[in-house]
Length: 321
Image (cartoon, rainbow, N blue to C red; front, top):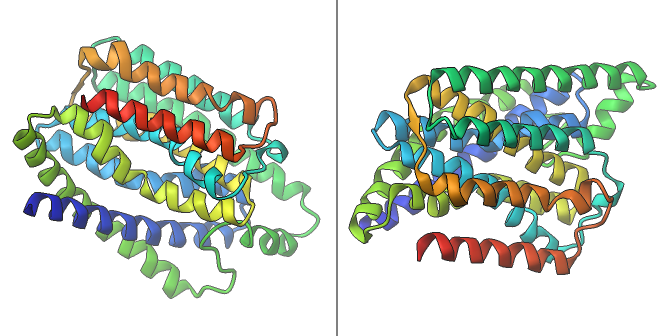
């Protein structure tokens, strides 16, 4: 019973620490005038992906690389099917008005690159550098878009006011000491929660005869997707579909490029055959399910919410059975 309690404790710490980091990062970035969509694609996405990063690095250092890869692949699948599915059950997400095509194509390119590197048999330092190089290109493009947005804005003050209201956790009047406090709490809490979660998830895997990869694809992936889920639910309730989609798309890119990129520099991450024949393709298929919403400009209705959520439940069942 104790490992389950400790897993729950680790998830709670990760959720609270991730929330603190997102709040601190969002308010810090908005102070310098970065628009809401760019913040969602970069700062919020990186903040909500921080648990995955800490868990993957800890897993490799602990000699459990299957947990690291399963965490990333499972989180990306959960981000699309569950993180967008559950909020759509609460309120229709009006994604038809969003313009995320550029970022979406970047995410698809990152997915294809990731799968291609996986077929090398392992993510080593070479693959890590390639992924981080692609991340650098993505961040440079986001920075260029942010600069263009600022140049086209009528006034910097109006830009800050409008965007501050569009991002969950943003407060244009938040004092600097509070921003720094949120950042410190996030940076301290994330490694603590990750360490607790990895250790006890491994105990459960051994106890129930489930592989570390399967635990990573399900329990750990679901837990580390909680920050994205919390952010997207609030965005859906507030009818801010651009923040919701931006968060998911950006988080998936960071998971593939930054998390495995950094983890591969810490230690080699071997790719099991199960990933090559099933899990990676499910991840890509889930990403392609966004085409109606991003390319064809359809809203994510409650019916779509049911379809996405049911698809995730089916995937988890197949992985664990």
